[in-house]
Length: 85
Image 1 (cartoon, rainbow, N blue to C red):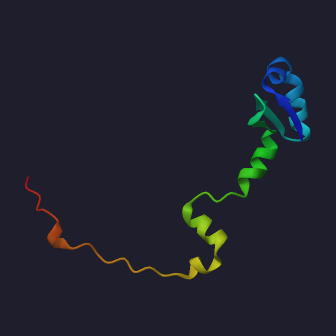
Image 2: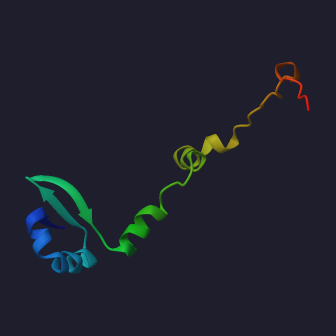
Image 3: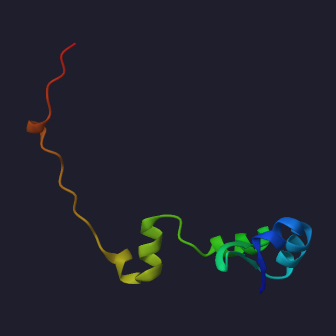
């Protein structure tokens, strides 16, 4: 992985994009990592493996969660107000 400081990145953006096609480029600001430049294809591969919902995440982390059956009680009718038109 190549590392560039923010000044180099601003002055040589085209070079950074070419390097990002090969591997992600780390960008620093005052010696600390602040950004990562990567190709869109690499980004798609990265997010493709990520769960989209909380339920997906639970099923990926623990297969037993998919077997849990939840009983959701019906709402009480006494809590609802009558509607007057």
